[in-house]
Image (cartoon, rainbow, N blue to C red):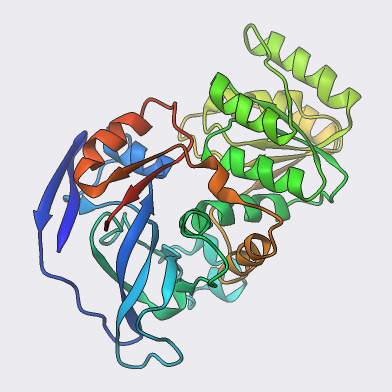
Length: 339
């Protein structure tokens, strides 16, 4: 099968390798489409180093083409989306319902072969059957949409509340779309004008704070307080925006950390404690609940997450597609694996 390896930072190497065979409890999927995630870009740029050349990619869509022993109630030809984070379901975190922070988690496209290839094998429970009334484009962005669903449902907010979102990458845009579709009022902040336009076209209100951190904090604090913002979602993944979110969050609100900055951010403990602000971590999603919720939201036409797709590419052009994604000007690139 044709596979795209991240050979080293900024270098994708196309190779032909053996088609994998499904093990006990697994299915094999012939992939048709794969989304490029921000984490793929970080790997590509060398922000996170891999020990060996690896097939990256994890936002996969395809068809089951072989079923391993021990798998029942699955059929060859089923259209499926990949759930790439596979908790061990045995450790203390999994057993307490927190599989998203499992320390033994298998991660497709990181700890094992990913989706930028023609085939992949994985546990059958993590290949989600896609109903016929969901389009390919909506199905291929199921995984990042589940991240947004998990983030919103991790808060105490309810439809009708007002939230703020900093950063409009794929997750920020999907969160904006989800919240607006459910009846929230949404304020957004983003440097990229095209992404800001997508959000405002959906119905969000844009705020573009200027100046240094202190000036930005003052501007956002005033607007968020006047509009009773109940939760602030940091989706940009930078230390600056994490510091900004904690500094500007209104009294009694929640700060939801969705972005994945590895740099040190700052906050004032007195403000957090005195004003009753809660800092809520949100990492990936819970299995199986968030994928179930997301599929139902798409199927019922509450959300149409394919609206964030900005361009298409091919497996042969993956190097160029990742370079384009690294510019930050694309909201979601979809790689077509098969014609």
